[in-house]
Image (cartoon, rainbow over the protein chains, first blue to last red):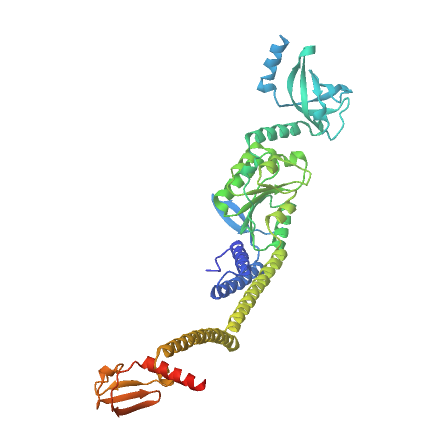
Length: 74
Length: 410
């Protein structure tokens, strides 16, 4: 499920987790769970950043239909 | 009459807040600070006044012969019975009719509220896909792809090839905006082109483009020409980028900064966890410390001391009351002694009892010769038999004996 999460959601959740951890109000079990999730999210964010390859396409009308095709840079 | 005309003219909305183009003549900079001049073209003249509060903010100087575009409204100066164009804003007319048209449209759309902040949609921080509406042959598209790809390759680009110059450009821009809204699946749209003449940029000053931008459900960044070029689409868009390159920087975050931020967040998570564990370990330590045997013994000793103190208090109290009772006992004993016949016996008296009924013999009348009696003295008793009974006043006898003794001594 975490693969479906957007970068923005992942980063927001990571930030939320960090601030709850810093507040230190949780039980040990909850803290550990949050911590684990935080580390997983930070890795996920990094992966999304590192592995992202920008896809560049163009939207064109062909025979009355809209198609996306890759943009050849001239 | 003049007052009536003034009211007539001033209430006419066609004469309020209008733009007039013309050439300055008869320019007078009055000592009061106000400007007076006439705006004229080939066919007509218009007397103008620009008061100090308006001309103080002028960025250039007005002079004889200068062609300007002036904004203002018609007013009547009653003392002279003259109508005046009261100028509030002046632009040099270098750019001609198009510039006036631009100002007029900008003014109209502003009044309509198309530029209002309340309609500005927020630009997403991390767009998954960016729609770019521009020519595929210009430098703008290459700049946008390069810069956004370098900064944040996470965001995909969807280009909609669009005419951005010439007669058909405005309609094409409108069409592309609508296309991206209905089919694009993008989070944000960049509408723009590189620099050019005011005529080149003109499509972005068209009203239908402005309205299409306003109506777009997807936030739009306007990126037209150079830093110094302002077009209507800049005002109506949700964000103005000074250039297409700048738009690419505004539309996506800096990936390197983000990576740093993520690393910091991760470090903060570690630190938070470490701090949490440290605090709790300390807390536990404290709790374990409270369970130390030596501390428990302390408590036991304390209890013992308390109980000892209580015991000794009770003992003391008991002793005290025992003393008291002992004292009372001996006092009573003495009192008892005082009334006891035993003391009398100690002094040499005796008690005689008839036997066997043990009736006290306190008179010769109560006994008789041959009577068996018991005589009790201080340290025992004797059984005797009465030999004789003589009735005599014993007191008198004792007195007599005393007297006889006395006589002998004398």
